[in-house]
Image 1 (cartoon, one colour):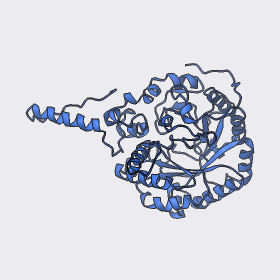
Image 2 (cartoon, helix red, strand yellow):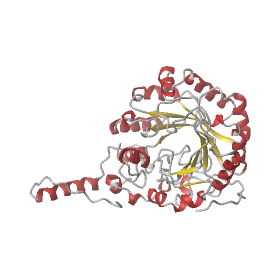
Image 3 (cartoon, rainbow, N blue to C red):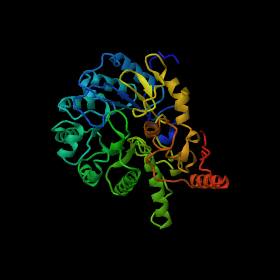
Image 4 (cartoon, rainbow, N blue to C red):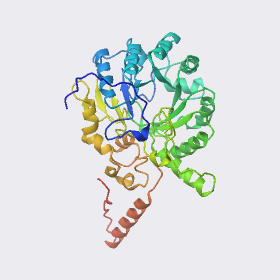
Length: 419
C-alpha cells in the first residue's frame, strides 16, 4: 500500500457525529503519538516514555502530511498525545495546520512546567478544540506517586484552571487500577469541581509498564461501571470509559431495568461511543440523534486508529500489532484494507463468549486487553463478568457431550463463532 502523496483539498464542514461515520471506511478518532519524550515517569506508561526525543520520530513536514491524509477520511477527531507533545517545539504549528485543514484537534500534554499560560493561549488561537489532563488520584500523594513526579497533582489543577480561563474545553483522564479503586469516589468528587467537559475513565491494559497484577478484577470493573452510570445521571459533564467498551453493556442493562420499573420512557441507548464527545451530539453541536442510530461505539481498529512517533500504524496504542507505516503506506488504504483491522471491525469474528454475546455489536470487549492477556486480539474480553445466554447453553451442551462419552476426562473445545 503506497502512501498517498496528494495534499488535502477538503474544506471545513460540520463535524460528523458517530452514527454518521462508516467505521469500515473511516475512523472517528485518530491518535498520533507525537513523541515518546516525557519528563514524568508514570508507573503504567504505555509508551515507556523517556526524557529525550527519538531522532526517528515524524518531522514537522511528515506530521503535516499525516494530517492531510487523515483529512481524506473526513473530519475525524485528531488527538496529539505522547510522551508529552509539549516536548515538540513545533506543537503550535502542528495544531494550527490541523485546524486550518478542518480537523478537530485534541491534545493530551503531561502536567509539567512546559505547559505555560502563553503556550496554552497560542494553542487556543491556533485552533485547539480540547485539552485533556491526566489525574489519577484525588490528592497529591496518590497522583504524584502514580505519575512519578512530586508536584504533578498541583500542576494538573493549575493547567486545568488556566485552560478554563482561556476558554479551552477541558477533560480529565483517570486510570483505574487495583491500587486506585479505593479513591474512585473521592476522585469523582474532585472532578465535579473542575469545570470540565468530559471525564474519561481508563481501565488499565497490561502493556508498556503496566503489569497484569496492576489490573483490577472483572468484578471491580463492573462496580466502577455502575458507579459511573449513577454519576452520569446528574453530572454536569460527560462520562465515558476508555479501553472498557463493556461499560456500554452496563448502560443498556441499567436502562432496560429502568424502563421495566417505569423510571425511563426513552429507548435504551449506550450514551457514549468510546470517545470524548456525547453520542447524542457528536462534537457537542447539532441535533440529537435517534437512539436506534446510536448503538455503536469506537473500539481498537474500529472507528479508531493510532500512529506512533515513528509513523507505525496500529489499531490502537494499547494493541501493538503494526499494520503499516505512514511514511511508506497510504493510511486511508491501510485502515480500510488491512486484514487485521477488517477482522477487528467484524463482531462475528470475535471468539469465545464475545463471539456469541448479544452485546457484541455495541461492546465487542477490549481487543487490546484480550491481546495483552491471551495473545489473540479476537479472543474474549478477559475482564468481563457477563455470561451471554448462548454461551451458557454452549457450555451446558459441552458438559453434556462429555458426560455421554462416559466421563473419560477428555475435554472438548466448545464451538466458537468466527474462530
